[in-house]
Image (cartoon, rainbow, N blue to C red; front, top):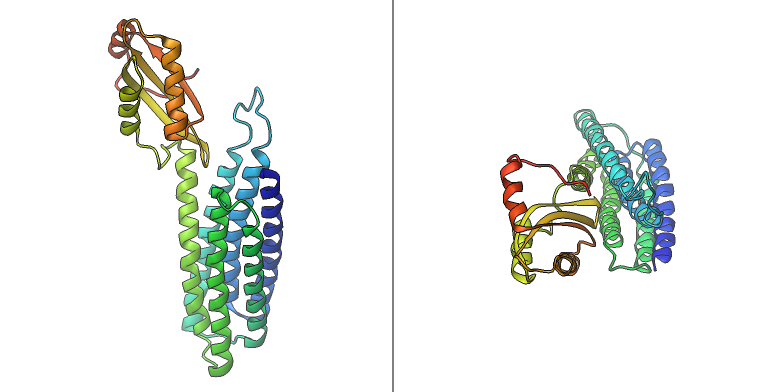
Length: 299
């Protein structure tokens, strides 16, 4: 199914990127800022699709001695760079919108309407293409939500074109472009926040460290303490963890380690974990010797 997802997302990406360029050209020729803003929102779609495709493509590459996690984090780096780019685009379009509200410029409603209608058709087509993929996959779901948002941008551009054609009131173009900007800003800010959180190795949102610690101590027999827990993500949806487990005298260290790893995988979705066993006396010495703040352990 991964290969099918990759091909489907790549097709949707090509269609979206090609029309995004056409929409920029149409916006410049017609003088419509709403079309250019909608092209910016299609850029967020292209970014979402590109990240989904990168997740499938680079996820197949094997890890190596120099890149022990492979190329999974490229997806996050691309997301961060694109989020910053989108925020700069938002600032530029907002500046242009204010200028056009203060000094309205002519807009060719006919070409604007044609390009906006084609854009609506492309977005519907991309949405139908994505529905053929594995819609339960988080990357596919995210891409579909982006495309649904862009449908609103195309509808806004169509409304602006019709209003300008029948009333000649051109300020509606920059006004609607600002509404489209809000869609871009929401997507870009979410992408920036998520990618930066991963790059800073923050705890995945669905994991509560204290809940995890209590669960392991209550559910794994032989565990007397869980300390120095670190949970982070290599890329979106790929969490990892390290922790120290203090075990009771006579407990089977191998059995405890297996049980902890099983609980982390099944209860918290952490497939990659490193568990360090600390015996009772060692735990006391370690707590006395370690400073108040410690970094992640290397194993």
